[in-house]
Length: 594
Ligand code: F6R
Image (cartoon, rainbow, N blue to C red; front, side, top):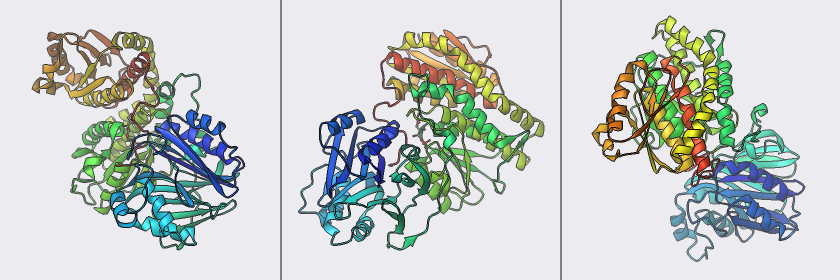
């Protein structure tokens, strides 16, 4: 989704901005632009398409000698992806870039900007036009007046030609942080500036930063000074190259065993799970997340309810936040998010807190909004995930949820200690089992060649197999653009089986021995109607057209190995089809708007 970078007091600001934007590319975008100030005047360039197009445009123009600037990658929401709608937007003495959505932009146009000639179709342009309109002598004053009129979410980086040595930033509901290094930086994502800054400051909602070459002052929207503590990020994790792999996604699949090992080792010492989580015995648990993180939540539900013997409800964050959930201090809410910035998940977290629930987050990005705002954070240790389609972060989320479930079951003595000891032992070995699963790669490449031209696929499974099916189906559709659906295997005959005909591809996920014979019946039903069935099974006998065998482990942990062949299959099918694997069309890595 949109990315912001800003810098002040940086020699060759344009180069630093481009470098930062390239590091934000993974978030997904469809246009990019920068603005610098040189000799008191803006130099603005923006282009539809990749950053390479912006770079080409910059080469053919001026020399961009300024030491201050702002840059943006745009993921279109209001108005098509084109040069005009790309950021920065300018009006009079102001230029700005914006992440988020201004929900009352039409009202503001009507109320304050009736006579203004708008150049773009964006909601963002309203902000810059308002700044221009409300400006008299002080930028800070104009910014404070403007932001108080805005409804929605916004992170802004603003330049003004009258104050050519200052960069202003605003955060309200969209992430933004500051960094001090050789110059001062601002970015929506630490990745953009991690190798240009050493000291970092996280902005909170309702804050304005006034940045000069040597100093940053923070204010609230009433223009009262706010004191800030620096925050720490773990930089050993920050490598973001592809290594020897053609795509980040493949590299990240190979990194899954390590992501699991690091997550488990961070909390499981010898045989004790160490979490500093203070919590009363829950009566019910809610899990809230989006996309793949929601699918991790489905697995979390199974293990939590099995070990804690209480009801566990999983909901997508976009539904949960508007569902008037019945929460109280006995109903903790677990929020799962790789980025820690997903708008709906963050809103769900805030709703849960408001209603008195204890909030526990499972987050990959340190100091992200969800991590900071939740009562307790259990960090996954997957390291930076660059491919838009999650793989290693999902696997690390599963590991974190297993740890949490076992920890709570031990704390409240809701399961046999022998069972928990066995699970902990297997958890320590989980990375090795996942590593062994990667051995199926050659078989998967052959299958990908066979399946590359299919138009539809159906994933089926029972119990944890259904959870793996849901995630597998999402993986296939998002990167290969093959239509795919996941069903609880027993549901097929209640409607969807009418779509099965000769040659339809069905992928069956088998996790639990006790459900295998039931799943087998469902496989037989679709095969009898001509479907070609590929089954992923952990040594449990399943008859299908082809089986992919994964190493056996405790049934409650089985999703961790089941998903790997499907991630690989999705990857190799997408590769056969020539898709843009790391940046699938229309998708963004961190979904910071509703
Ligand atoms: C799919 C994928 C998305 C994310 C979802 C939530 O491969 O990555 O479905 O899981 O957008 O993102 P986070 O985990 O950052 O909250």
